[in-house]
Image 1 (cartoon, rainbow, N blue to C red):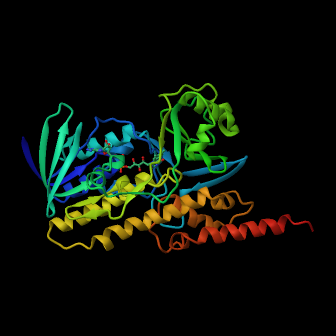
Image 2 (image 1 turned 180 degrees about the vertical axis):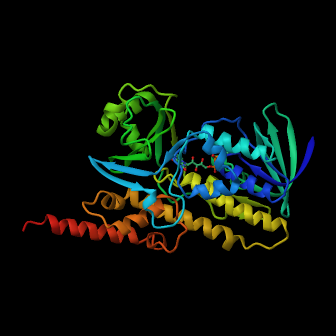
Length: 416
Ligand SMILES: Cc1cc2nc3c(=O)[nH]c(=O)nc-3n(C[C@H](O)[C@H](O)[C@H](O)COP(=O)(O)OP(=O)(O)OC[C@H]3O[C@@H](n4cnc5c(N)ncnc54)[C@H](O)[C@@H]3O)c2cc1C
């Protein structure tokens, strides 16, 4: 059996794995990525947030992504019964990036993986991690390739960016259910011949279909648009037929898209995903750190996945470098707390979306520009800016605002 030695083994070549690998590699360490699938591979998660551009910049990926000419994204539009609430990232409270991209992830992830490979990090596709044995903080990982050949990799540290694969939590029984209720998504890519070029494609659209049920519309620069319905799994049970028949019925039943999407060709048979939220108590241990989706993926509503994946990886990479230099790291304070800060802010917004609080705020008759700027920052992924009251007080600020709006609307609509 082959035995290889590296400083850092990265599991998974998604955005989490490649960002971490690039930063550690730049610091002069020997890094290797093992990836279960062959790229390009399909993965959902196509609407990025401006905040992830900071991590992509440090990883050295932005120029390569720019060259591909992906659709630039400047905000998000929320629609309900003919009412529209537009958020443009340029209006945000926090200084930072005010644009990003809408990307078919198969292509985007391949660019990141190719770029990190050009920087000198080998990416071993179709290599699946099957076992890890830790000996203090060093480890021996067993990897099996598609032909059944087995290799062992000795590493001083492991960064687990295996996404839904959840390699370390599964191998060591660390998985814990999320506190969010289960949700399901049914989605495809359509050939979008009736897209309005006046109103789109410079941002994503979220349509409230029914309370708790919503639709994403993410236009790409190649004329394809990603469309998905998300909600309680029971909602989908009311519809009979194949996934394609169900998705076509749903599209026909939503006035905002029915005409545009009637008879549209699907680029692939619709797919479903459900019960994606899962977490663990600790995102680190002796000799390893979990980054990206392995830490906790919440919900697609605010496109937080790739941002949390890349920012957690960026933070972890710096800590791993310091650890390899012999510094002692307070993982709880320096990693767990900042990652949970971001996760918890998004979690409050996800809960406020599904319980109707954000509905009251987004579709209010009036809005205060300064408050909209603060919420806009969160929607752009700036969830670590404690100067922003809508970040700092994320558990209460939205509810207070919704109560004021509801009261104001009641008073204004009261008979004279
Ligand atoms: C319905 C839905 C919609 C979403 N929409 C958005 C969105 O609009 N915007 C957004 O930012 N996020 C979105 N997300 C979340 C997004 O999919 C993830 O957050 C993102 O892909 C996380 O990146 P990652 O690098 O952590 O994991 P991944 O991109 O999943 O990469 C992990 C890699 O690890 C590999 N791997 C797994 N197991 C092993 C193993 N044993 N050995 C070796 N390799 C392994 C996998 O093959 C994979 O390539 C959505 C999620 C869902 C469920």
